[in-house]
Image 1 (spheres, helix red, strand yellow):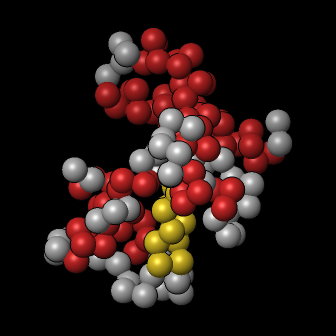
Image 2 (cartoon, one colour):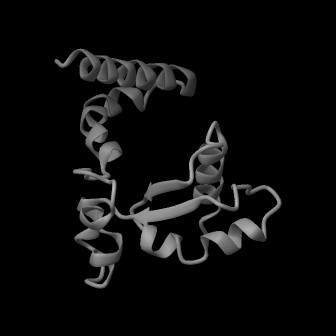
Image 3 (cartoon, one colour):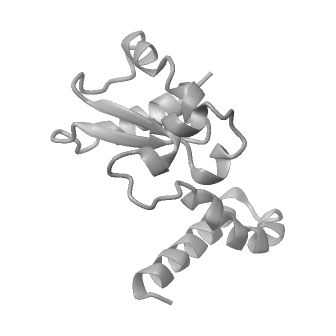
Length: 132
């Protein structure tokens, strides 16, 4: 059920993370995903994580509003020590600019579409970097 998510998170946390002891993983359904995460890692030969690594699951503020009330105190970023003032919804904020170019990108080949999306992401990152 969470095969792709588990694989992505394990690979991201495995890359250059030898000294990391704790990782905050923000996922729209982090409350459900985290329930059996470690057992899925232990039962899969392709999922590897350092055994001492502590995974702290969280749910972004936008998505948490749609969850059960019991999820709020446990998965809210407001209560995660070290999370600061984080909303956990950065990818969703990037969709609005993509919505402007998606009608044009639909008619492109896959390679051209990827180039256009990459170009728009680079432009977005550049504007954030220079503070525009």
